[in-house]
Length: 311
Image (cartoon, rainbow, N blue to C red):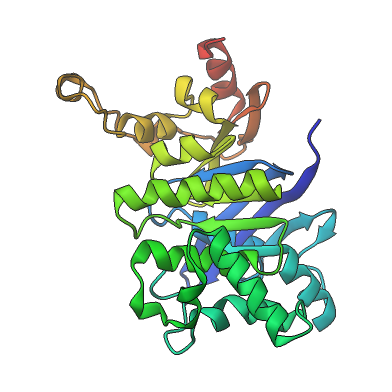
């Protein structure tokens, strides 16, 4: 059985935006990520998927719950040295390649920032050799090292962001909608690069996105979020062939098909949250409908999903 790299247990991230308003951006999310896999996290804008990623990497302090990385509590009390060690193991690729790079720094300095912080190069020459190697790894060349971010296209900037994340040799990377700001033709190139790097370096990814077709292409398993809750989690192929939660069905029904005739006749499923009329004392939780296929449901819904499951 694959080894767990990350365990997220009942993770909550609540924001107090003034009484009595409490925004439950992430509300009791639980899942595991195994070494070498890509877990896709999907859902509509505002569902809490990016907040989940940022809380995992401790850009936000968790309101409640646990994040265990190799068995170690990410949100436990840590001194500067321990935080530095943790930050090297876990990195993030951000959504906006324009905003995430310092416009006043050269590409070499952007990529080498982590190398400098963690003391991974003994000399300036070794530092530049690492930068050149990273640029080559992401499909750029060493002539790009002395340029500034504004001299690059969006796809090239995202490659620079990937090189920066790789510079400290992490085990785990959170890719927070890394292709949403890019042209469709460039999106495929960036995703193929991420898959190639995963195979070469044994990386583990949390891939956050709202493009379901692209998520299926890169992910081993997929989690679906809705209003701060994880409502379904299953292997990628299983989720697409046999979606159980009504919200997952509505998301999948919205994926356009490359066939005009089928597009004209295809029925889209709209999701109505009122179908889940839970009693106050009713226990609603993630339940395993089939091996590896979990759905957020009540006991009554669980029986319905079991009966509806296509083996």
